[in-house]
Length: 468
Image 1 (tube, rainbow, N blue to C red):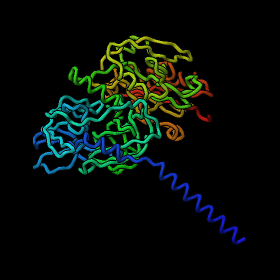
Image 2 (image 1 turned 180 degrees about the vertical axis):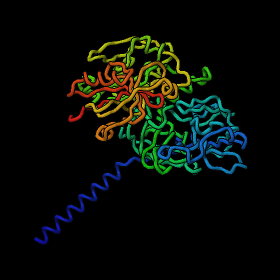
Image 3 (image 1 turned 90 degrees about the vertical axis):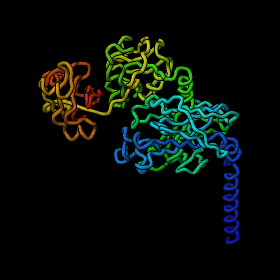
Image 4 (image 1 turned 120 degrees about the horizontal axis):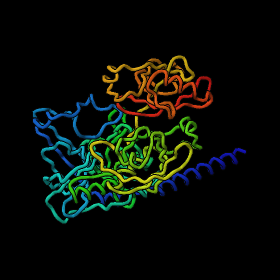
């Protein structure tokens, strides 16, 4: 028996070693890719003089602790030396066009590009787009090495990707990982809702900003831009701007000097199971319309509050975050079809898109809430005086204010004291009496949808009556 046990143990060790060896053999070797791509990756130094630094910006303590850009306003530097931002970039044409992040060069008085061969060239800012966080630079040179651009739309979760950049000033550092997700929205950067971010676990830190994210063919599929962190450093969640989005912005900057996007003119939010039930949807899907801007493309097309947008220009909309990038990618003036579900029926509307001004295409409202006296919803409201409406910036006569929320409701929703309730279901609310009547008419077994305002934003919240 002893001999048999020894033989079995030896077999296990052999199989384990063979498996480990096979796994090692199958791991990719990125050295040829890096050797070919590295010459086109650059280090960028953007400098502000002391007077320019007084224009504004954050100090580090004001920046969101959990979500920081790598470089930009707020980098601690001695005032007497001005401000210096270090980032990365890459060459996209042999005649000297360089791509990086807007926040790397934002507000800079002087920009220096350091090439792989150690040359330092002064760069001109051709144009930048804060909303996609893209900046296009130009250096006076020719015959430069160039990175090929790939198709970010072809990326799939689980694929290998590689980053080359200058974290903490260490030029041409290489890190690798996999794509964690595509089409990721960034709730902490509402001004970038047009960007369907690529999420990866590639290690990037301060100084990687603006550098390329490459696929295994050596093609640029993204531009490293941000990290999600509660420490200020990499924690396994990194975000890159899809190269398709970036190159669209680049072409517009070259052609017109600006970047234009289509605008529908709605505010939308996501749909959870309770809201789907209240809307008679089989599954939670689509973007729930919580506000339609008067005179906007959506208004003219006949889109209404409480419509659920499930398709845009031939593309399915499963989550609210998918809608803004789809709208923003279409040129202003374009005629598009918008599929909506209204009161359980699907219909197709035609919209002619406006141009985005300073605001977003379609924004997600933060969670909010509202209700009255001892009612099944567990929310108490009161009327608003004319003075209170003026102080709150509420136009017209709609809305009541939440003064109390029962603990069970507070635990299930984000309804807060001070929220303004403007609708219950499809009923407009102008007084506490309206609210109580609407709540009293609701089916006691069904969730109730409230349209709320908080801080100038609107959002539907679904409340389940007590006992359900």
